[in-house]
Image 1 (cartoon, one colour):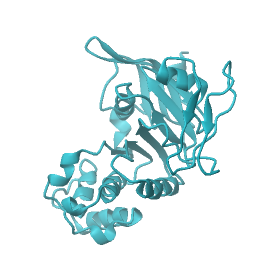
Image 2 (tube, helix red, strand yellow; image 1 turned 120 degrees about the horizontal axis):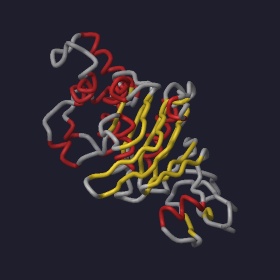
Image 3 (tube, one colour; image 1 turned 60 degrees about the vertical axis):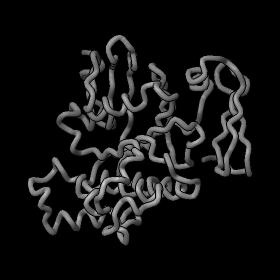
Image 4 (cartoon, helix red, strand yellow; image 1 turned 135 degrees about the vertical axis):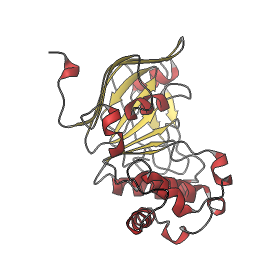
Amino acid sequence: MKQEDVQNPEAVIELYNVSFSFGQAVVLKDVTLTIPRGDFVAIIGPNGGGKTTLVKIMLGLLKPQTGTVRLLGEPPALSCKRAGYMPQYATGDKDFPIRVLDVVLLGLIGTTSFGPFWNKLEIQRAEKALDMVGMLPFGRKKIGELSGGQLQRTLLARALVSDPEILFLDEPMANIDVGGQTILFDLLAKLNEKMTIVFVTHDVGLLSRHVKSVICVNQKVFFHPAAEITPDMAHMLLGEECSIDLVAHGLPHRVLGQHHSHDKVLKRHGRGSEND
């Protein structure tokens, strides 16, 4: 029996020998990956390395040319409604004349037969999601009146309104200052108590103390079950074997010591904190 035919009951995401290309351009190659239930995963890698493509394949938004994908034990087409997805923030989003509450209600499309004529229960669900992210007092405001951090929390509420078992976030810290990033990470850590979290970032400095594992993507995929940047990941990201200093910018960073043939890859700088 093939490995991909055996379902792992502890896994929320399973990929076996997955490859994906846009035309002749290879984006992902021979990806085999398992993410356990309850994980808090950071997907890192250079721009254009395949991070967003990987998430879209996990969600069933893109179909790989080869390989097997399971989300929550089923093909993504059958289980994607049990997942929440917060896509990349677009600067034009704030120009659309829509209220915060209505943005969150859009997250129920596909899970209800009532929209866009929302009933009282659905409005209560949206208000509960806004309350979870601290945005309930802003429910009647237009999104154009929000700060970048407030808009991100609104989009997070939209992803949460369907009560997902797993939450995907693509560059959730974009356009947010350091204080807003801390607030959002603490919120995600609380959500992680009841759901799996998968978030994408191109910034290797954004490895919060709450992160439990790291996936490095640059056509190929390297999984590390700890919130560290290993020498293998650094080599994949940079394409060379050299020492790297990861410099803190007001946030604590995780230390990486000796690993495989490298003597030292990452050193911590900053104010004595141990992670980010």
